Image (tube, rainbow, N blue to C red; front, side):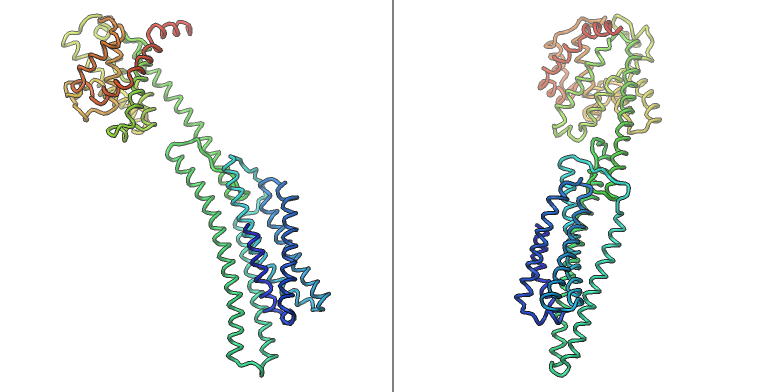
Length: 489
């Protein structure tokens, strides 16, 4: 459509230009000039359409833009030669007359060809992105800086050439009509000619600048959008490789960089998860709880967090990334038990007050150990949440918990979630000091602790998803865990 518009505009402008710069054409009937140029342009457009269907569309997307530009500019040169030959044979004009028109035609054709190439480049870029394609880049692509230098140089030469032809024609005209036309009328006539050419070249140049800027902005925006997402932690993105130039090379290397970051990040995550399970298993070997307790509690925490992430009170803290870290860090909530003496940790009966004071130290022991690791890995590591959970999961809503006696919203959300998950699992499973309670009994005890032991909103969340808790408890029961463990062994 853009090229059709260019051809229609040229059918209007080129005849006017030809009449203005060539005194021979000026003597011909204007209708004949218009019909001749319009006919040649129509034939040129048909030739272009044939080449588009037969040649350009069958090429790879990488080569289509350069091939289309070559065809377009060649067609305009061909039209200029035909017009020169026509006037030379039919009207017996000198070849220099046709050359003047050819300069203007090629100048307009270069504007049209460049604009059409930029439009095609944009279409290809959208197709590549929509269909998730990647162009195969060639090693000898034409650099963008060289394109700009070449286009600018050619445009300047042609524009200077057009204005030079106008000056020559007007000087000859002034000499020939020196005593026939008033100086003021001659000045107005020349000014109109120069204004006409200046307006046309300005508008065409502005159109090229806007077209190029549009494409440049598109490529840069795609690159920047992907880099912004990568810096935000999203590595499943890539920049469409949609042009055979520096932007295509930049996109290719950006995608390779993202791929390597993704692979290394996945490796770090696997290392992190393995480290968590290893540390949790270490604590598990010294406790009277089974490994299934770890699997159940981390899933309870995740289920509660997923339900609460849309709650106004929790939405700022429970995004998807944080919930994933909660899930991964939850197994470390009792890591501090490795520092508790066996006589207390494994005691089958009720602990004395002195023994319980020692047992309560496991929260601080675990947090201190994780703090050392966190300082080595950085404050943004997953260990930050693990330390918080270890330190605060025995705090109570009314401030009667330990080790710091925090109350209400002073207790981190991660600690409040873990507190409920840990107590629920302790209630429904058999321990050496108690039998397993039913789900209903456990829920009754938790309701009694609503607003004293537990955050009321988190208890309400448990009420809403208690079927998920039942399902998790059944799927990861101690009996099934022991069976799977024995089968692996």
